[in-house]
Image (cartoon, rainbow, N blue to C red; front, top):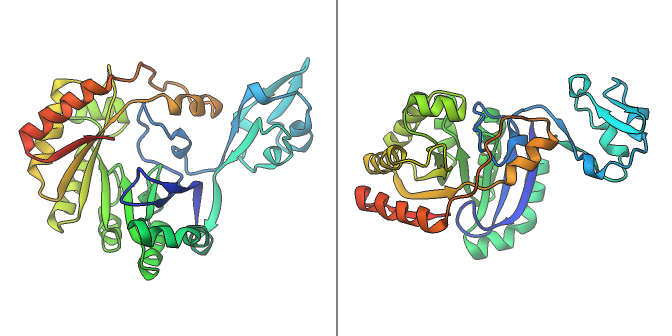
Length: 299
């Protein structure tokens, strides 16, 4: 069994307890306008093109069988509609102006990388976190990874948008120590506008995690001009207070790290605004804790 992976991040300190290795799986059912990992939208491999690195050598055009690369008066023209994501062009690009995002790895290959830091996991209480994209969009592969982590005595976390098959979520929960569950917008209208999908299935899955008393951290991106409003702050607080499985709320201030990657992938329409002031988000944390009584932090 293999999965489509776009990054393996070792020594992460922000995606669960202790030192962790984060496995980023490609593919997501949502397309949030502020996403900092837009390379996780599509499950298919993609070419990332950085025009600033291109020296116009023409090697990519020489190896591309589909004519996706051409040079007109020395200017590199890349036609994504002709690209199959095979990665041949990236392999010959000496400046890394072209890079392949997404590769097929087996459970064994991922675990071989994960186990390189096994002593650090034991000393710090860390382990493995599955992220994305939406890791449970590749549910069978994700569950196989989670099972193997348990066999190796590693703790496991899953970062999920909640828009996943409920049966697969319940299967994954058997092998997951902690869920980071996204609460991105309040109400159907806001959720569809900002995330590209309904909120109802997300809340239904959160209720299922409540029923089995899974351990959950509610993660909430805070984006000025989008969801940073009193209605959403109240929605976060009420949701956190409603579910006993939620033991902590994390507010995540918007940043621009996804914008550059989106441009290199040819993705348009991503949200761009100034990040919120940390003091403002800390103020909202206090309000949320005051309403629901749960610990709320700025991540």
